[in-house]
Figure 1 (cartoon, rainbow, N blue to C red):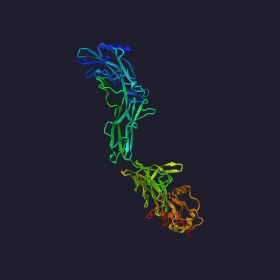
Figure 2 (cartoon, rainbow, N blue to C red):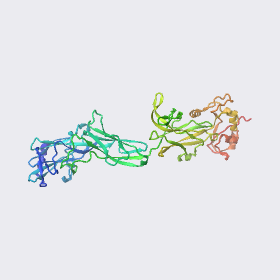
Figure 3 (tube, rainbow, N blue to C red):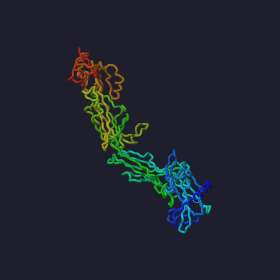
Figure 4 (cartoon, one colour):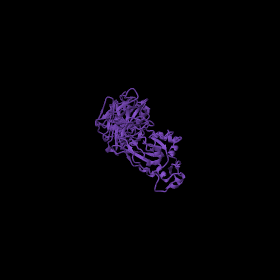
Length: 573
């Protein structure tokens, strides 16, 4: 209570320790005094003091202690009749000459004598904003104050107001990585619990090379006015686009906010301490926040094009001339494609994206990576890539893709190949590498499985010529193609864009580009000699080797697990 404070004050006055002599003192009409050398100055009316705070939703405000001195003549007493939103019972840090931390409020009194022998009393008061203050409850800085008055004249009262500032925080954290070709747009925000006219967010250390601010800090609020809506949220955006020479660099920079145009300007007066050190809390308006930015190299990313052909571009906004369409991706996310001897495969699309969405990558065929070493697969001869182009990522409308509304581009190429007869039954791997202008690359590999015992007809082929190439009889080939193929085989044919020979009623008509089944495919359970196979299926070793070009002609046996195409010479007699 006020009475208890007066009693405590009188007790402390009785225990005063005389201090330095010879001070020149000047007092005003309100009965408050100051040393002319400025070492002790009673705060003026409506003096503002900056307090440095942090704010956490779970714990509230945490602010520095502020202490000041009120100097009066010896025949007068000082009381503190009005305080609002400040601590009075919690522990406050006080200047080191007063010993350890004390309870907030009156810390002590000291006695001084001027050059005329008059005695003056200095009352030391320590305080800080309440930790329980909610941002929404603070309308302006006038809501946090300490008022004091002198006993003569009794009506005289002065108030000291506390200004609260919360340091800036990076809205997305403090650790960032940006790749060459990308731009980092980093909003830095500062929350203020009191109204200010403007707030500046700036570097306190050397800037990131080439970075720039996108204009001044802007006040953002959900209310109708800004500032002030309980909490002013000021945001300033830093933009940084690294260069290739900066790959691997890490920059650590500090930013802080500085308030301008406070409704109550912070005052500098003697006898004031910030925590345990004398002087106005004149450190920056907020604690610096350190942000670390690491420059990396962005790698191209494998993408899947759609199943609908789309017009390709030579450069952003420019279509290929003559117009070309992308190959439909009929097997989404597949890495295995079926192929048939003599027939061109459906072009296999390859697409890669980069951090620079309009960059056209260079693309080339490479040897299979080391992870394919154990498979024994190799790249077949004759595979080709189309000229790289830009595949548009366009908006999808009710009528399909709208190329006029392109959002970004991928680098695109397509793989083509026509398997020759000598690769029937074999499996291959083809790898495409996409490389950007900085040398960063990505690889996508697909496997090509060439069907065994299936032949794709060419112009001029007849049943007799095809059968003769495999040391068989046209009747045997014709009879093998009667009836239905399996559902799996039909699915594989459809994905390859091919069809089997279905008009078998007239064996003299054999159109080009259809698939003939040559005979059954027999998987061997055990190691078997070529002679044994030939006798079992009433054929010859030469016919077996002609239909199975992957068999070793120098070896007389076929290993277990090998699948063999056989054309039994059932019509030889």
